Image (cartoon, rainbow, N blue to C red; front, side, top):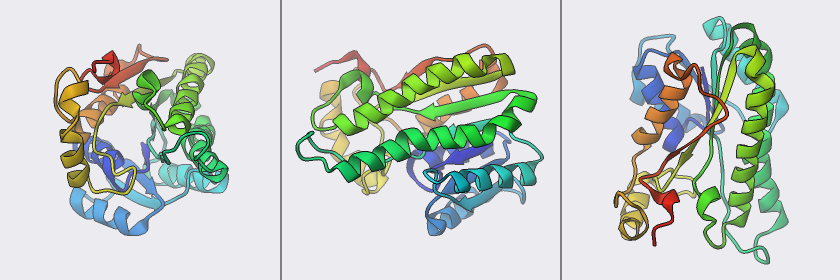
Length: 245
């Protein structure tokens, strides 16, 4: 399996969960120092976790990433497109360069990774899990760039589910709600404190989610237990998408 954006936040939680369940995982991210920290925290048997510095917006990096996974594990049966980024701002404030960065990371990155993985997934079937966001359902103010790119990721996922189904490849989306993710540079602890002040007012279950909640959903979608599920979107959000205010 491959997990992108694996060095911190949700990606690290997903990687730890998959390794704990016995998977062999290539964890890819741009920051080698954080990847080293992830490997230390997992502390697994040799060969179960491989780390690789890669930028998902570069086609050559995604091809190298897939080749490394196949070389290490003898094949590839799952891809988790978790790498993402956000720059907030209203349309008249958000720089074009920042919008393009979000587009490249949140949409083109998963496209490049899936394209690189496709020949190997076609041989045996498998699972692609794209990490979306419940902002697509709620459309909060001043986040249009993130909403637009995550919405595009969902549309692409549904299209790919139809195209790749004949090969036995499933494509699904997990949409985290309000979960500390380090996406905007704060630590998980800092985000949890900040989010805890407003979550009870807008979320049915009234508490901040955990990275492990999202990781559990991803583990389900890469497992055989979801063998007859494709083209779906699963909200892991404590009821945030219900629109409670």
